[in-house]
Length: 371
Image (cartoon, rainbow, N blue to C red; front, side):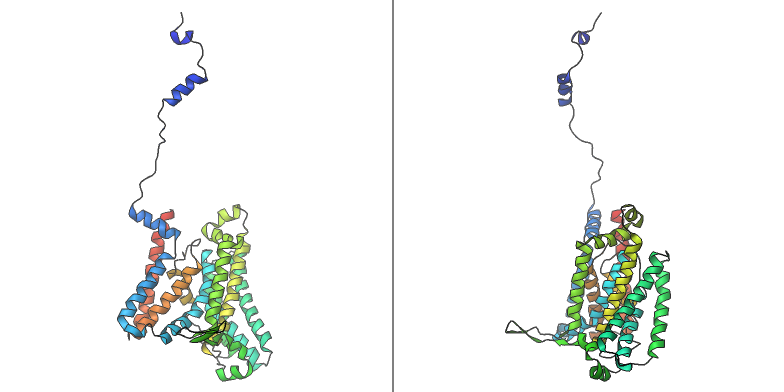
């Protein structure tokens, strides 16, 4: 005995299509509706320069109201930019390192050692200034390469390595310089090229036969800082090497499995960082006019401050050069504004330290968006 369905024979494609066409076509969704706070976390995670830009604008507004027109005086704006030039250049080197989830506590010592070598060779030893300058840059490269070798190939922790080399390079600086300062007059007479980055620009500049009043004076070192920042931004965002830096900092094991030579990337980053610090040493001579073994003693802390406040994650893989420039400006604006307001130096450092703590706390909160 056959059933009615069996009498019809086996079901054909048309029967299956009729069944499917009558079925529910909705797709199950398991995504949670994101709250406003969650969306804000994701936005800040994707745009790390947003917070430092907002903080910078708030700082400018607050200090312009607090101290009045003195804050926007052309001379004061020039002073702020000159003060942050060295910090921003060293901050570029520190950004490259921190993007790989590392840190370099020796950057200040490399800056000072490089500029002392340039000055001593050119002034005390009478070496042609071009050779003295190149050897100073080479010193920075060798210091960075030494850090990079210990970290990338010997797998030593960056914090411990650079804490040790901070003392090593600092001791070499004091030994080689004998704690003696080379006067600006001596450099100007024998090796003016070393002061070249301190050449002032403005307030009047001529361009294509036209004269412009920019209202403030800058130094060539500030222009070099902007050019270096533009080059570093291009390298990080438009080259394979930049992608390797981000990948190494975000997840070194995944980067290695993807074919990235993470050891070579780390070595290159610390070596390039040493070169950038040596260039900062050259700019430092132009900024202060002299060669002093005591100069730049806080550059390691200042550079880390600029990078962290600028939105670069201490855990690596997230950050930008633009954020570092904003961070350096924030440090400069806050210190300058507090000075104009007559606040004691003790409380100026207190404010900067508080900024660092807040920046790290915000970074830790933003990182939860990717968890």
